[in-house]
Image 1: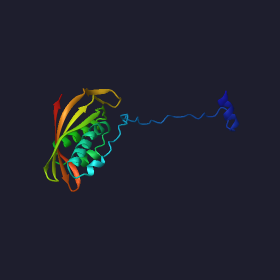
Image 2: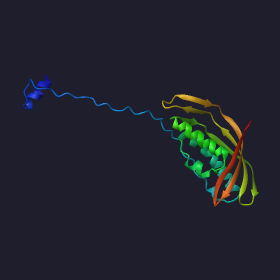
Image 3: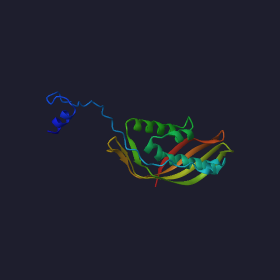
Image 4: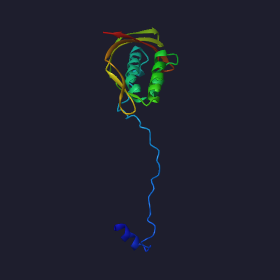
Length: 180
């Protein structure tokens, strides 16, 4: 009844065609992973030190980026600290890129990093840094937030070769050994 009244008010004949609405086909957007709120670790001021303290700060910062890059896919700071020949560094880049290309992300992997022994191998250039790392539980989730795989909390002893190159720190190598 309301439709007949509206057409009568427009001056069109009451028996005329009634406008019809056609639905347009809209492409369905692919679901995207829910972004995590993992904050990017802050670069420590101690990295400005060209000695052992700076090397330890660089190594600690580097490892603090580990959960961030897996949780967010943002590899900018990781790549900036990675020496081109660092196998560990490159494997993390590959793993993160593959995981995020599949629409997956990681949740968790909280790290606690405690500095251990450090030494200057070549004055002002090469440093060896040992860090004890406690890694929390982690889960890789898919597009819909479904768990894909997970891992338990673990402890590691990391030994890193840290190089002072052109006024900046780079990680030349990293080796993790499970510890108690």
